[in-house]
Length: 180
Image (tube, rainbow, N blue to C red; front, side):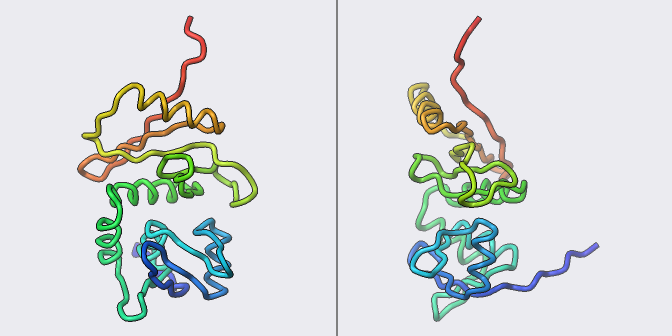
């Protein structure tokens, strides 16, 4: 059975590394679904959020001269941010699992993830997610710092490993409190 294309909800304007939405109906939808941040009566989306909404046919992104399709935005993201496509794959996977996903920048991770059913502003995130390629190598002190930071802010640390086929595998790393 073929999926019906859902109606595009509106246009966002590409401004540097963000997409700005001013249309009231679209802003309302985005806020309700946990996309972007409200700033000066605008809804500001990250490139990853905008890319996801473009793929889902919910948003058109333009810079005023050119309309950006999925591939255009992906290319722009890859130029601006290391590991962008892998981060996008993890973002998409988490969103499609019904989870609310926000930036984890202030916690030193790629994303913060809220439990299913939590709305923006009504609860706290439960996990920090750091996206890494499968060939990534790190030291035990680096792992320990990430886990310590997550626990300090009452969250669990998840490493999302994206393999070369684009599959995502999640590993939860935590501190063992008592060993007996």
